[in-house]
Length: 363
Image 1 (cartoon, rainbow, N blue to C red):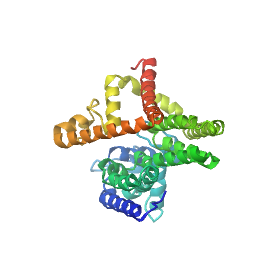
Image 2 (tube, one colour):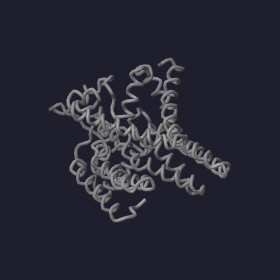
Image 3 (tube, rainbow, N blue to C red):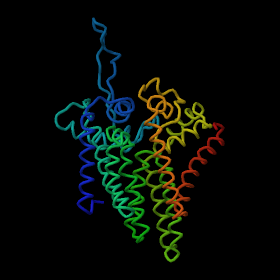
Image 4 (cartoon, rainbow, N blue to C red):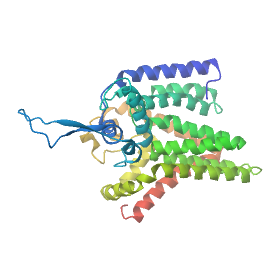
């Protein structure tokens, strides 16, 4: 996990320092949108008007604090805005801050965001460790590029589950690589636990994990002398992942069904969804603002808005992305089985989502 050479230490420490210096000024800024919703609905609570109190001369009424118990943090599922793991970690962090003499209703923006920041900083080291066997140059450059990337910095400064994946996804890859290499039970347990935590942090990471496990299945098949032993533990590790996640979220399942029943008819999975899925995968943003998010969030970014407001920079970025795709295809040619298995993992997840929508009449 840790850097192996002086130059790697320099690069990772520079990236860490740059990320902290860039993010620290905004860590104490006010909670926004989804963060505020999480505080009110799943972490802290809110003030309510006391309907039984007399109205004062100026029209004001008495307020009381309606705090939330841990059952709200762990098992209340009103919308996909609730990220279980980040909510639990943010609550623990804020409780530690409150122990310093602050009221039950008080919160610290820095305390709420600190777990995500720590996960993002750890991610710089973990991604370097993932890439070190491939290229020492990549292990040096990737932490710096991540620390300079505006989306990485943005999610590091939010009390949400997305930033936790910056550490959990490379952790899954590291455990998986070690498990396939020597088939020790401890590495397979690491695969199971890290995958479960990633899904608990944000269920949307499922296509990534599915693609990774398909690639692992192909890699196992290329070791015929070890196939039976590795395949058994691979299956058990993935079954353990599902069992852990199911135990964690089973109290929420009825709430999930109710949410989906009310949400799917309003957001059918049509061609716009497929276009956006491709845009999310390639660019990290939607192609068009189909759901009019810009009306409530003027800073909402889409490919269309980028081309309108920053045409030159966006076209340069698209050209670099195309070059990266070409380089990736060349790498796939060298190891075709691994490349195609990764592609199929993403394609299968996309097609399965559309088929599920078609079966329920919402396609």
